[in-house]
Image 1: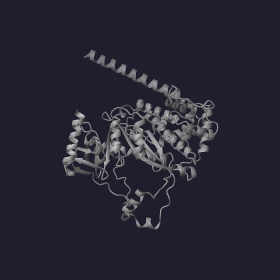
Image 2 (image 1 turned 30 degrees about the horizontal axis):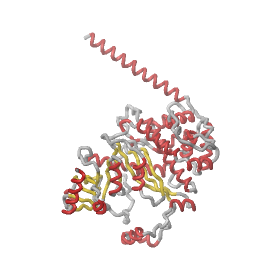
Image 3 (image 1 turned 135 degrees about the vertical axis):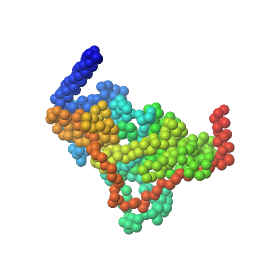
Image 4 (image 1 turned 90 degrees about the vertical axis):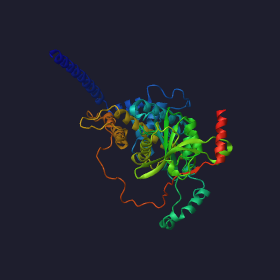
Length: 502
């Protein structure tokens, strides 16, 4: 009995010594960090983001440039994170801040700065690749979900000033007068409100289209494409799949706009799986004529043109789920129900909604709903680096929050959805506003990034707006057009299977 008590006492002493060592180590790290100024702390975060190795070592720039790529990239990120309404004022402050950090080889004038950003697209491409690499390193348990790396794709628009350059680059040449637009006006004439006929809409101003691929687990922008206001988001996704690499066991999730045989074929050629909502805009073939019998069954996507040209059909899985009060039809390339269950489909499609919140953060939190540059190339560079700065800021906050333990009185585990973009941007901007200040212990940039989370409260009420009237112009998404496969199509399918087997 005495020996057991001695063993317990010795174990307790060892544990207390270990905890005291950990507390002392944490105290020394905090004390060392708290003695730094805001600019020094921000410089450390930038150094980690850009890496110890030169990411531009293999790139060739013009011999007459007076700037260094790393200094210019740091200047561009600082410029994009400014709260100033004018891009020139933001540039002046970014130049001043770079000089305080010792970055003397940055762009000295605004024209040189914008010329460098518009001429060398490799700068943003390298930083985007570095952000992806860092996301993989700090992601931890949020990098994969049930062995899937989850990506969502969606599109949105931001406005630009109505200048000649922007109108020529971003406005549709035949806006409202095309065959498709006239047909849609004629078809939906009965659904349009009478006040729309009395007050005719003005011509649409120039806008830039953004097609973004977004990591659903980490809630981070992964990659994107920019184009005119009439760009095709499906073509943007196809271009991304052709030019960029994605992790193994990737699952893409999209809404009803990302449908069609070419896009789905491209996704499967990229060795990726997909989960897409479908409606009346999709025609499928099945063994059953009654769609109600296809709650979770295999269907064929085989357009007549592809059937005549001898292309094999796409074997997909059509699943009927209920999300909230809405019944939806989902199509996925994962045929095995054990690898992707109906519950996972519901949860993943709910996670996809976060990309809409990401667009709202870009437009409202960062105040990029309307850009400032009147030159089309400068406007694209302004938007490109705004998205990059948002991704970098969220990554810095994620790095500090994932390993952070919650307080003892907080029994809920940390979730990535707790991260607040507004608090993150506010912490960085306050640090940039007072670069020479030494913050109080526990109130530095690192601590603010670690605590940049949304307010926790138990809200059990419906957050849907009570005063918003229903929109009569919005058409409901119907059930997909599922037709029973006929005898000639079955014969043709059998011949293709025999040909492939031979």
